[in-house]
Length: 359
Image 1 (tube, rainbow, N blue to C red):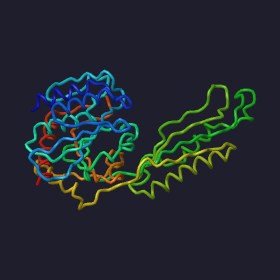
Image 2: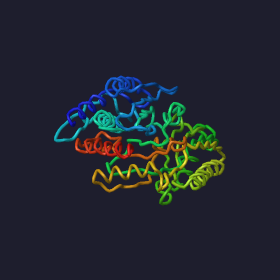
Image 3: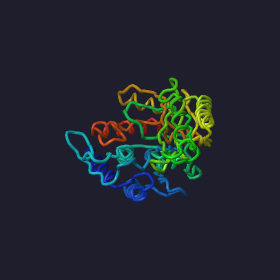
Image 4: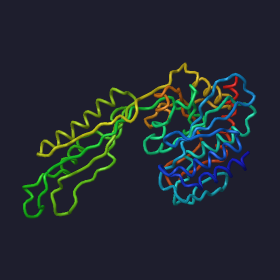
């Protein structure tokens, strides 16, 4: 198993698929799934790949969704995988792409080698890394599954059962331009207003389930001019939806008041990216995941995280879903790597899951 698993994984990561440029990789997957898994494949209107694989020795069971994302973060062009001492890494100048191509390779290997599995609806989304865009635009009318397993976690024993509400906050501050050397008193600095607002906000962990971050600030055009414009991109996340709304309003007010205090004006736009979700303790999808992990000899590690996943979107669309681990480490960095033993363990876990779903 490991030879083919590693070979296919390395082949996958060599295909460039930074967010927004996944088409060649998704075309490759469609051909692979048709050829080796007997799948029928189609792309929805956004370009997400939907592959249907008939059941194998598993009669009268409903389809189950298995999902991964096909895009990677940057730098993800020209990835050269290096296999050494049981670990797969990149050469060091790019990410590896185990997030999430390890999940795809493991799912492919598990379906290819399983003695039984239910009907599968495999969904490979686009642009997950830039805001779950593919999942948000997924045409669920193409699907019949009512439960799903998203292969995009880290450790093999993990099950992500909940996630946050996520507010995107865009700020445009307008002050008044003036010559910084000749008549600075006539200017109103948009950057100063932005800086004051940021200084009074609590960033990082606002409380045990809420985070705030200012990720981008841009302003001014010339060194010797009082800056008329400043732009800020921030976010708020919370496992409690009402807290997310309330603290986002606090952030909005901080920019508006700080701008007004010096004679500037702040226009603040709030956009809810997705809403907090938690899979109920008695959900069938969670019971199946726990059983499979236990049969693999592991103790299920149930987690609620403050990061966004495709499962957040699928749950909102009516497909009850959890996140399972694929074994990747140091994701989103040039040190990203994965142990082959973890990939093999993930495949065996999927075999157990298929068996549970067929009972």
